[in-house]
Length: 67
Image (cartoon, rainbow, N blue to C red; front, side):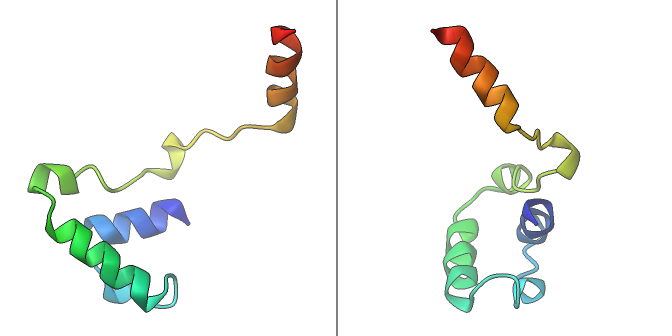
């Protein structure tokens, strides 16, 4: 979901966000994105492969290692 929404925001395709986000949120995001430079707008899209998942056992191992 993050990748889909961020890619639509990066393309400023607000109509496609209808049904995914509330209209209020779409309008607030549109206003914020309008203030960004073109180079900042290029940083909005997130590739799903760049998202790293964390699992509870990883957190537990880190916690146990600290004590």
